[in-house]
Every structure is written in structure tokens, then in C-alpha cells.
Image 1 (cartoon, rainbow, N blue to C red):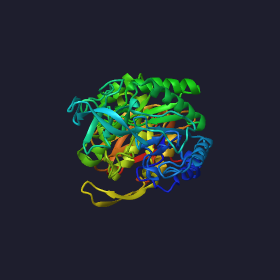
Image 2: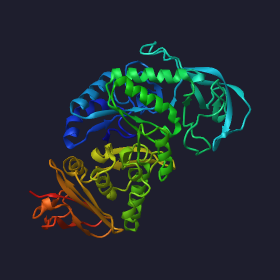
Image 3: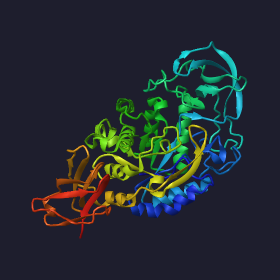
Image 4: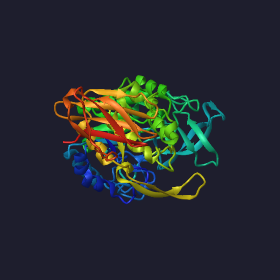
Length: 488
């Protein structure tokens, strides 16, 4: 799959038209599914990335927040893009942000209690009445698609009250409870609250509205699956119910991947998978952490441990493997960019092995250039160049990553594996070094006896001949990856 956007995707309304045009090319390259950004109106209007959700029913159709179109285009253009992607033979995964709403239309008098920001189970004030933007009436939509009005009974907490200078995190004292919902993560005591007006899933009217919205959204845009935002902040019971409802309604499996970003904390990912009964995959934040670490340590990193503590090792069929995303890219909140030299190695590790569902990040294929403030508040220009050889590694998965896999993870600085192929696909041999040039004596299968292999990435110019037992000495350049496939 491919994440077809990044944090700094231009706000000129061109994305839907661009992906519509690019779809046939991406399908031909070997991409099978496109993950699109949140398509609905955000509080920031035409500048919104969609994660500051204002109106789930406004796909760039109504004049709200100062604009009809979203950052990415109009509803009509969105629908045309989805159709073009699917007609090219790829699936479409829509981004579902169910954690919060922002940019409320009216204030209400609400009873709240302030909590300690670092231990949110601890109240640090008595109940107090404040005014807060917790009414969402959508005057620009005038009841089209849904007449549901969100009010304070639909939210567990807020971080801004309009009639006070007091900032902080406040729980809303409503009929569903005075505290937070149950979540897996115990960071900050309870990590239910993330931002905006935090949605109250203990309210049955909220769950019912999400069911209606999901069905409406599917009827409007026949998507094939979901990327679920910020799932660590949402009670697992909501998604268990909602995904069951959506799959039953559509009569389709509808792929789902959740973003539970907890680098190096595999135990939390496994707990969430258990709590959601395997109904969704998760992004492999642990493997991303290993890649980031390996890219910084160079030859001091033991490559034989690259999959240790990863989701793809523990739950191979529920792991979506990533090299980067819109949160980890430079100047973003979870900034942890894998160093450029290591990216081809990392992509080989997710694209050419048996397990995991790999996700390609937009700038890694197309590049990106943007300016934003760094930690010191200074303007910083970032240029992300396309990953060397990625346009060869993606089709290599499509054409060669089949059949028996044999691993040779037996040297700290040089590892390799082979895929034997099957009746319809020839296999490949992969060698990786994070130090000096390397070589691996590996078995690829007797069917290749006497056959010549070449490095499709062009890092090595020689050809290698497989012996009559199906073995050969495969090579790679220093700090690099070579992918060997049949020369003829």
C-alpha cells in the first residue's frame, strides 16, 4: 500500500486530481492500495490536513470554515479520484479520525474539572461551570446528510474554555461519567484525551451517529478499507462494534489498520490487538524504531537483531510495516526520520520478505520540499529526495518476492535471504551490509542451477552463477543492498 500524502502536501486543492492522474502509473509499478488523507472539512478550513475534524459529512461540498473545498479538493474530485484508483485495480483506504472534533459552532455552559496534565486521573480542581465550544450545529450544511447536533454530552474532555484564561485539560462532567474512558495506554495516567473536544463513546447516541456516518460514507464513496487515526486514545470496544457493523453492512471484509504509535513498546501493540480481537492490523511502530536506530548507528548496529521486538515478528499477519509517515517526517511531532542511506535497505526488508504488509511513504517515491519552524522557532527548509532504487524495489516485490524464504541472519554487519519463487514468478536473493562490502553463501534452489543472476539495483556489475546444488555467493556493496534476480 502507499500513503499518498505527507504533512506538507500543498494546500492548493490539487491532491485528488493528482492521484487520479497518477493512479494507472502507481498500479503498473506494483502498488495495490492507496491510503488517502482525511477527506472531510477540518477546523482550519482550506489549510486543514483533516486531522482537526470539524464536519465528517463535509467532503468539500459545503461552504464551511471559509471554504467549500478541502486542502485536497472538492467532493466531486475526491469521488473521481477514488473511482480512478479502483479502476486502475487498486484499493482505497480512507483515513478515519474518530477521536475528537474541533472548531465548534456555539458555546455551552458546561461543568468541568481540571486534571493534572501528567496524571490525568488526578483532579486538581472542584467542579466548575465554564463556557466551551462543545456545540456543533453545522449551519453551512443545514441538516444535509445528517441532522445530528453534537453537544457536551458527546464529549469526555476539552483543553480550552472560552470564558476563562485558564488553560489545561478538563474532564466534562456529563451523565456518562466524570472521568475518562478506559484505554490500553497508561501514559499520563490515562491517555484517552489527545486534543480538541474528545469524543464520548459511552454515549449510545454517539455510537449510533458513527454507525450512520460510516454507512453514509460508504454509500458516497465505495472505499475498500480504513486507516484508523490515534487508536491508542480511543476505547477498543468502540472499534470492535463499529468495524463489525461496517463489515456487516457492506458485506465486505474492509481492511483496517490502526495507528497505535508506541515505538519500542511491542507489549502495548499486542495488548491492543488482543483487546480488538484481531479485527485490525497495526502499523509496526517498533520496527520503524529499529530502522531509525539502525540508520543512526551505522556499522555499530547488529543487523541480525533488526526484527527483534517488532510487530511483524510477533504478529506477521497483522503488521503494516513503514519506513516513515506524516508524523515522523522532519519538523513533525514524532520526528524520527530514517537516515537516507538506510532507506533502500529498510525498503528491501519490508518489500521483499514473506511477512508484513508494506506501506510506501509519498516523499520516498516522489520527494518533497517544504519550510517550517524547527524546535527553536527558526524557519527551516527541508528537502526529501526520492529513495534510491525504490522504483525498482516495488516491482521486485510484485515480480520476485514469492515462494520459500531462507534466512541468513548470521553476521552483525551483513545479512541476506533468498526467495525461491513459484510456478509463475522467479525468485530473488537479497544481501544487505551496514559496514564494508559483503557476501553471503546462500541457497536459492536447484531450479536455478547454472543460471546467471544480476543485481537489479546496479550496485554490483558482475553476474553470479548458481551451482548445481542451487547455491551461490551473492554480493553487496558497502553500506548498501543488492537484489539479485535472473539475468536472462
